[in-house]
Length: 463
Image 1 (cartoon, helix red, strand yellow):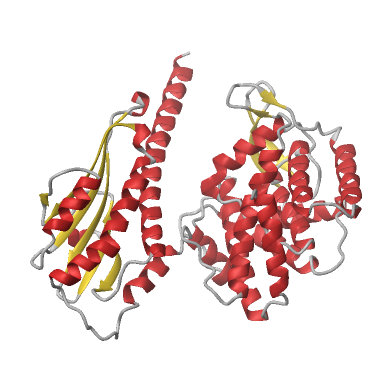
Image 2 (tube, one colour):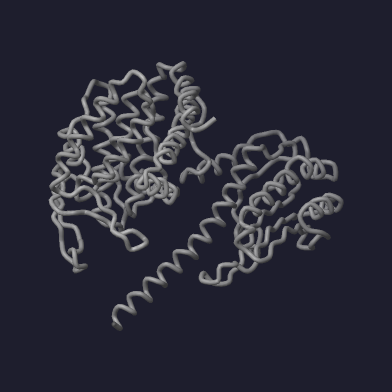
């Protein structure tokens, strides 16, 4: 099933749960609103973290040391979303005046922005809220080519045509709302009618259309921006299907969240930036339980078979995703800091034979050595999970640094010996490990990019 079909199926399931409990719906929409504000602004370079965004929107707390402009972007975007959420309940018609009013709410007031002249000289450009652009806003692509949006002279006519196209398509009985919303987003971006804020306005308008048809908003996550930009670039060469499918994929995630909320289930996502709270909850979940099983050979063996072995296999599967980046790779297990014989499956087998009641610590390491892209430098990465066995419980630790003492590592789960790691818990832990490795490589790439920019700047100075 492709994402479009899945989204339509989930929409039907959601409709079957309507009307939603008012408190549940408010909680769901608050999550969407917070995520939407953070990700849409962060995509465009806003520096506020998710936590800072949440504090600003919910409590009016500003982030110390962050630009005032970034705070205005968040509050303006939030006002625009709140306006959209209010009027979407009625029969508001999408017009050019509507779009210009949305732009005014978003940017709040006219301001100057640093820019470049046609011959590359620095200048300042007046960004007027609620008004179409007065100067070209073409962009230079990574290949050095100019990508042309509509000229200021063409923009009014093209915006008129876009609205007329939308009205006709919306009245079509066979219209697919997801395709309509995605295509409107892309066509709006191709015009780029304003001097600033086009991406944020495009995503708000796309979600306004989706919500008019009873869908939740599709949230484009900032950590997925490369994929977002990639499908937009494909659309620029008339390959629209990947972009439509991408929007549908993000809509599926929102539909799944809304359905869980409608059923009274948790609406938190494994990769939420609030994940620390969920992990904290998992750590204290066992408080007050009666301890019925203590550490012994039998309980250790059961924990090994039902929790450690699945966790080890999942860590191996995660590690193999990065094998192509490195020259050497190993998976080993140590018991009380002594390496057991074998690697990969053999290590899992031999460690099971050696786990005994006096064992205190088991560690598993997926070791990647010698990054194979020389421009980024030679570096290693070790993904580590440790399990400490105490008298009444076992504790799962995680830290990227294989050489830190276990007590300094981050506790992920604490379990009684009567409890096993669930499939969900293993999945969450492995996602964390995978993200740590991905972020590490991306950091190396960003350092390389900064180095290249520095060398280019130096080269420019010497010329």
